[in-house]
Length: 150
Image (cartoon, rainbow, N blue to C red; front, side, top):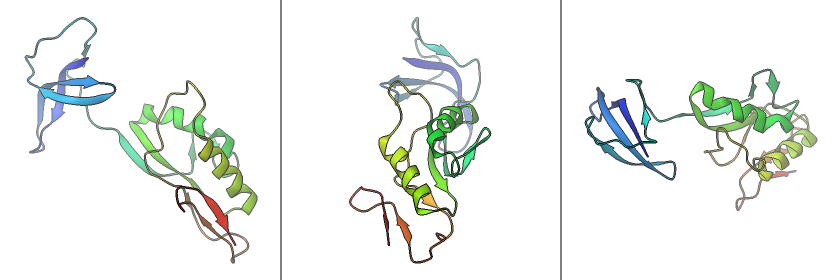
């Protein structure tokens, strides 16, 4: 598949017309603007085509607070591409151990089958502040397994 009639950011930071060749959702080639197109290719109509943003602190969005409603993580993530965000790091503010554990379980289980939206591009999650019991700390990466440690 190709995206043609697009404005692309060049290595010297200039916008130039071009064509992107895509296979399995990955850009495989940047082609000249006058490249041959086929039925099924996408006309960008002169719009800028750029990589998506990665948001490294998502506390929630679209009326959803991920600290109080971590079960809605994937509802928030499904909306992020509308803002140009294709990857994110979910963030829970200072909370109880139970809140962290619930959020971690939802995060570890991953997105539901057939789900579409922004992906967790950054490993881990980011708790903000200290837990109400200051002796506890949330450690989210230990041999790839999130956990809470006393």
